[in-house]
Length: 80
Image 1 (tube, one colour):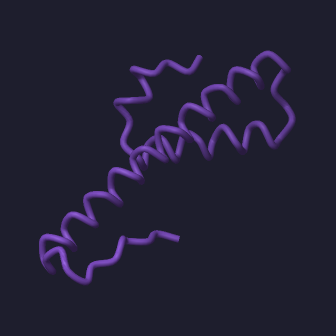
Image 2 (image 1 turned 120 degrees about the horizontal axis):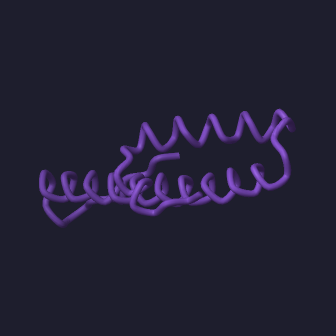
């Protein structure tokens, strides 16, 4: 179910929304076991995709900060 090409084309927001739907369905306990496993696999792939997108955004922000301030005295961007 976790089609990597399908997931790679999703924006962060699309992937997060789908992940939230999967979590809600899994938490409901209404899906059969095999479907739950498939959803879990896709959810794991979506989570990894979101993490990659967030890391790329963090690196872009750091690059902007370094470019604006120069290499001296910069701190890594934190998104907690």
